[in-house]
Length: 85
Ligand code: FES
Image: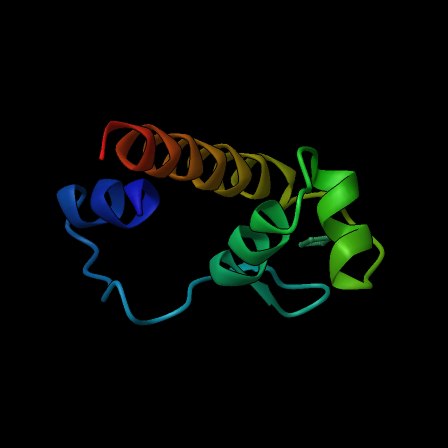
């Protein structure tokens, strides 16, 4: 995931297999937001709905938005690859 790559470039090491907490208020990780995006969520609000949670402080919105955008980009790339095969 691109967030992990950016953090690695900044000196913070993350494993692709490990989840990174995005929303501390609800204990949601990047993988949760990715799952919500793959389930059809296109906005942070929709992602919270898919995950059965409600936003509280809102500090996670930027990172959550980026997780969703990256998941949607990954899905688009997968669709292009499938179409090319
Ligand atoms: S960190 Fe997500 S609502 Fe507070």
